Image (cartoon, rainbow, N blue to C red; front, side, top):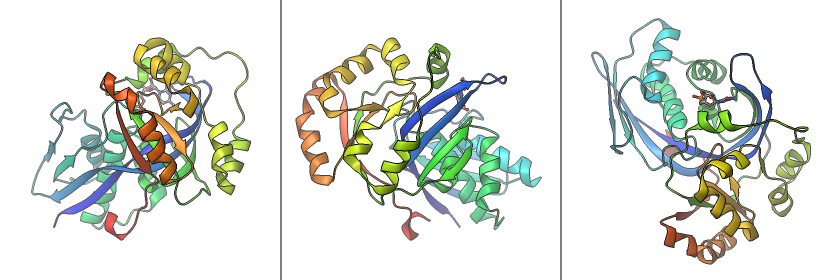
Length: 287
Ligand code: C5P
């Protein structure tokens, strides 16, 4: 029996880097929020091996793919082979700071858990996810969470049921490692407290003024198109998601998002895409 899972994208409403760690990673404090843009992951148990098929030919299908790493990690955790055929229908652009590969991998963990009736709880699947990625654990449960450590320490947050966004998609692949490498930490880190408060009460205009991404200036310095778009879109308060290249604009409601989309249509002359997204709603149709 095939299991079908939606793998939702995320945006980082807040991303502060608190310091560099001895293991080479960075200590983060980030608010991740799942949005309705999603890949579709189909998983079927088979007799042997792991087969992966991806709709986007630019995405590799070998052991390096996070979806295959997810199978290997769960095999290591359970001590048994979990042979399967996985199909990824990609809609989330790769290398865009939207967590597509990580979300696909978490969806594979959920699907394997269901297909093999493993009945592992969320914290266990999050721990397995942390063995092969930093933002993979968040996608086990999704929603809105404050993520700390490398990104794998998850604290679910109260947040409005539906937020509206305009995504600005430059179609540029930005390797996360390159952005962290270019980061120079100077000055004090920003405190997330007021951001969390406005998120909890659902004060969107206030939240718009309290969005923050420490990685944005590095991406600006290294990627000219990101810099130009941030400049041109400044009146709409855009923010880089993760390490980019996607920017997002937080909107008051669907009507506002439609208006913003129309107003910033000029970016399309550069081959930059725009689309409206709202908060993901995991429901029965997800499974
Ligand atoms: O763990 P993940 O593969 O998602 O991270 C990609 C790269 O981003 C890492 O190799 C590392 O260079 C950088 N990174 C970091 N600190 C984090 C997360 C990622 O330096 N907390």
